[in-house]
Image 1 (spheres, rainbow, N blue to C red):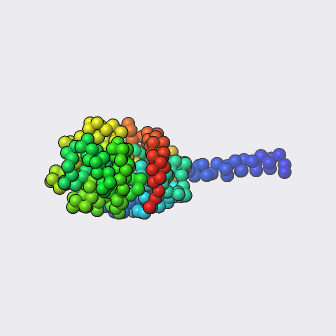
Image 2 (image 1 turned 180 degrees about the vertical axis):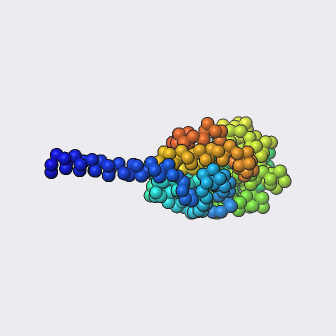
Image 3 (image 1 turned 120 degrees about the vertical axis):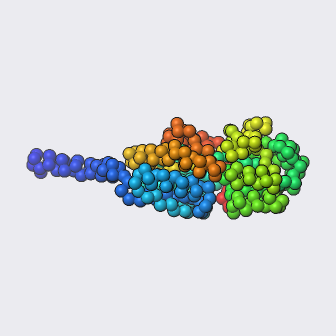
Length: 330
């Protein structure tokens, strides 16, 4: 090959190698130019489905493209997150979920993906606490009295939850630890079904969401003992926190967030993040989320690096607890 020919060949080869990078930059600059799919790892009408739809409507206005909700329940949400992990890293498939999917599942399911290596954090959206409640016939008026009752009735306690490893189940595990008792868990396909059995007196105790349980506490149908967050719930200000009741180890909260496949261009994740932050700043959006028992995190905590650090910290906290309790997927 002549000197001129070799130079021309190297020039063309370098140009060809640069094409994918140029293509990715052009794609990011044009994003979005078609509808975005938002995967929800739960059936319709649940907490995260409602949150997804509230956010999707606002994001649609900001980005000028529709956001299509796709519900993919099953296997604790791991089916939806598995699809997210395998999706093209272009920003057109994004996923919403909780620490159940992005932390807990790694300890209890044989996943075909890595929740850290295969996913990229975009925005921390909200947090929520569990609400410890019991049937109205219980002879306990507050959390210390409930713990004493659990100790005295350890052989007959019935405690309901809506799925192994989830926030409501983990709340029960924490209650076992502080009471130093062991009681069997009664699994339900949904928290609403479990709550109905607490109302009917067929279940003694459960941890529920504030939004679903507080109206029944106010109506005198069940007893409310404490919330597991760092502060009282905005919709239930009369209910003390577990920490206020003398049980600091019962501070347990779940969180909701948006993730994308690892390798999504930074410009694309930046646009998605900005649109979500704008949605979370909207008073109407915030009210809708508060009404379903969610607390929108402060703006400075919505950053992807905060979400990444929270995910790592929660994995370090819950992995040994779940393994010690031999918690496995049902």
